[in-house]
Each structure stands twice: as C-alpha cells, then as structure tokens.
Image 1 (tube, rainbow, N blue to C red):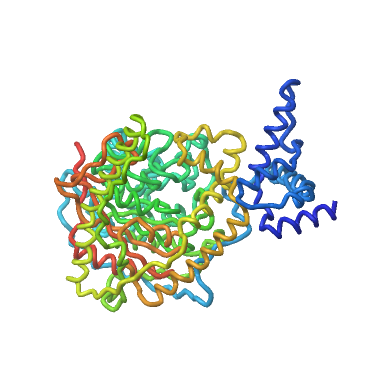
Image 2 (spheres, rainbow, N blue to C red):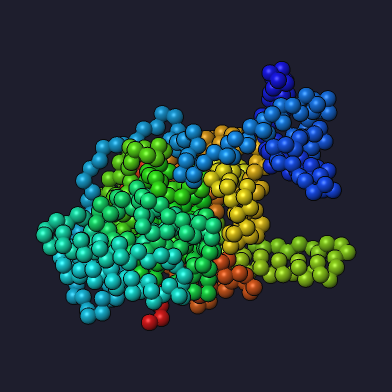
Length: 627
C-alpha cells in the first residue's frame, strides 16, 4: 500500500493533480456504474464501496481539463480509491457552520503594519434639538446623531421610539417583506432599561436607546436565526453573536431580525422577496436585503449587514442608503453564518456616513474568537481634515458606455431561434440604455468633487483575472453547506436555478483543490497590487459595482457606498418580463457612488465620504411610503 500511494502521489504531482480529481466526479461515475450493475438485483452499494476504474479516471481527467497519459492511469487507481475512501470519515464528523478551516486569510501584504492606538472618538457637534410633534413618526428618518440627541436629552424616550419603529415594521412588512422575526419582547425590555439608565445619568453614548435591525445570520439567543433559508427556518442558537453583544453593551435596542437572501445570496428568502421601498415592484437586492430595506423605509435607526461579494454595496444602492463595508478583519464574525471564511465581512447600513462610523466604532476589534481580526484602531474624527487626503478616480469606469452594436443573425436561423435572439437583444438594449442614462450621475459625482477643491489622479486597476478568483467563494460556501448537498436538503432552498446556491454548491464540488490554491496565490498578487495603489492615494472614487467590487472584496479593502441622487421621470424602465428580484432602475429610484480606501484606513475613508455626502446634498432623501 505504501508503494501504491507513493506512486500515486508521484504521478498526480507530475500533472498537478493532487486532490484535483474531486470526489464528486469519481463518486458520480463510480456510483452510476455500480447502480447500473446492481439494478437487476435491486441492491446498490454505498459510495465508499463503489470502485474507481481507469475509464472513470479518463472521464474525470477530461472534466478537470488535465491530460494524463494512458500508461500512468493504471498506477493511480489504488491511490485514488484509497484517497476517496478517506473522505467518508470526514463527512461523518460533526462540522458545524461555525467551525473555520485551519487557515486564515490576511489582507495585509508583507511588511504592512496597522495602527493599534485607540483614541477617543470625535463625533460631530450635537444637532440642535427640534420640537417633536405629537406624531413621533416625524423622526422616523432622522440620522443617528439626531435621534441620539433626542434620547439623550429625554425629549423622546427609547421606549416610545422603539414602539414607533415596531409599529412601522408591522405596517410595512406586508408590503416590503423585510423582517423575519420581530424581537419585540427583548426590544421593549432593552428600551425600558435604556430609559432608566439615562434618567439616572448613565448615558452610554450615541447608540444608547436606538432601535436597530440585524441581518438574520447573526445569532440572537431566544430567537430563530434562519439564514433566510427554509432548511434552517427553525434554527436556534443559545448565544449571541459578538456584534450583538457589543451593540447590547452600547445600549442599542434590537427590534428585528431582518431578511436576507437565502444563505446570503440575493433578496429571495423562504418567505418571499424583500422589496425596494422606493419601488415595491422591485426587489431590494441582496443579500443584506432586509437591513437595507428596513433602514430605507424608516423602520429602524440603523442596521447591520454583511458582504462577501456585494451584499452591502448592492442593497445600499438599490434602497438609497449608506453602507460601510469595513476592511476584512476589522469586525469579528463570531456568531455569524459563515459563507466564505476568507471573504465574509460585517458592516453597518445606515442613513448617513457618520451613522456608519458611529456604529463601526462600537462593533470593531478583536474578540478572542475570530482569528482573522487584527488589533487595528478605528479612530473616528468628524473634524478630520480630509482636504489633505490624496484622491484618485477609476478612470476607465467613468467613461461613457460604448455604443451598442448588433450582430448579424446566424445562417439558417429558425423562427424560434430568431424570436429568442430578438428577446435577448431587447433586454440588452434596455440595460444599455439604463447604463447610458446612469452615466450622468457618475459624472456629476466627479463634478461635485471638483467643486470641493479635490484634485484627482486617474487610476487603473491591475490587469489580473479577478473573476477567475471568485470560485474560491463558491468552494468555501460548498464546504460550509456540504451537509445540504450530501443529504439532498438543498432541494428545500427556494431558488433552484442554475445561478442559485443549490446548483452552485454542486458545481463547486468539482472545483480542484490545486486550482483553489492557485486562485488564492493569484489573490495574493491582487492584495499586493491593491496595496501599491493605496500607497499612492488614500481614497479611490469609483462607480458602485463592476470590476472594483470584485477586486476589493478579494483584497479586503474597505468601501463606503452612499446615495448619489434619484433618477428622473425620463429614466429608462427595466425591460419587460424581468423577474422582480432582477428589476432595477426606472424613474424615482436611487443611484450611488463608492469610495474605496486602504486597509484599516476606514476612518479616513469615512471622513472623506461624509464630506462628499454633506456637499452633494442627497442626505435626507427617503421614499414616500403609503400611510
């Protein structure tokens, strides 16, 4: 056996195949062959009993895209069967979603250091206290500093504020489908405690007594944590996530577990589609669908979302709110659902940049559990002199969309094929018109920055295959939810299309381990390339979405996404026939702009974004919801 394994390792290493012939390929082929052979007798061997044959190796090698000479296949068989049998004990282990792999992703390039000196945060001057009308809902869309001053001065009680937001949640949830669980009993108790403490002169800070919603992947003791997915809709944990504990310590009041796309994808969850408050005929985008929608609809003071590859950026844009995606390794993920251990990030979704900064100030830093978290400081200073920051803009991304060209129809096209081609062309034309229309808002952002006296350096992203690196997310997700695939419980997920998790996890099981490692090596190249960019500038201005979104989620750089205006009455409408969750744009809907920063420079980045938000004049815009 030792000789067989040595021969196997020698051959597979020659062809870059160690662990690349993923068991899914050979399992499938072996099981099919065994099932065919046993069908007549009505007995089928277990997967571990089905043996791999040379013919299966040839087919698997073809799927893996790795040629293996015929003479080398024979000596691989014993090793492959031996290796394949080793998977079964691992699958029998109890590996909960909370158990991370024995490796860590660190976004810091070689030689980089972080500032760990914590300073007292400097918030903006307290806003003037205004008279609160008898209708408390007049303050529903106030910012965190505005609400904080009302609660601190006892012009509004935390209990009244909490009950008002809970009433709004109950009123608008049937329309927007943005909350899974209202944590009413917990919230009322917290609000009463906050009022009592403030009355005694014990004020914890600007979040004290303010209601918030949590994306329903954060564990909260005593309430279900559903991950937005039917297989887990009755799931409970007997502990609170670190972020929940820290907001409890700040005196904030949790009023709701907000919806999320199932297992952190999109806005489709087991109860429906979360809607965009600006246009309830559209989804709110995802996967932080509920946090963005509840904040946009004036049903909480702030929310907590997460992003792996756009899940704060996209719903913040769609719902016209401000999102802060922190540097990877700034906020501990203990007690949060894991999708990708090397890409998941937790961050605030609020109405204003300073709201986000205040929330981040209370949730960041090591907790002794999440080993990816650096002891870096987030020193918010509302008076920071942002004018000394070096600013760049993503030159190519701000160029006008290229004219759309139609291709000639193929020869011998049937009537049915022609109809399908014309339908695709119509959709493509509609989306191109939307991109052309939205370009004006990107250009307006640059104009506003020029008015602020900002000199911007043109920047180009490194020429690296970022999209080719993103399968690491799918592979990690497939591992995190391996049980779903192996047991067939993935069929319980609401979305079952080719681009939904159930199918993506199956496909990911064929992702070679060697290619995963190669992608991570390429990712390290991206980390170092991004570091060079932010050695030369402090802030990078970019349209939300596109290649920068992929790159910076891979490299772990922070982003602030903020509203950048509303589309006019002349805005192109989404093409007809598009499913609700994919509809976007159209008259009266928000657009956004994104600011990117260096690793653990989130405070400087937020200070610059706040200056832009104050200048641009879109702060305070909110949707008009029915009474």
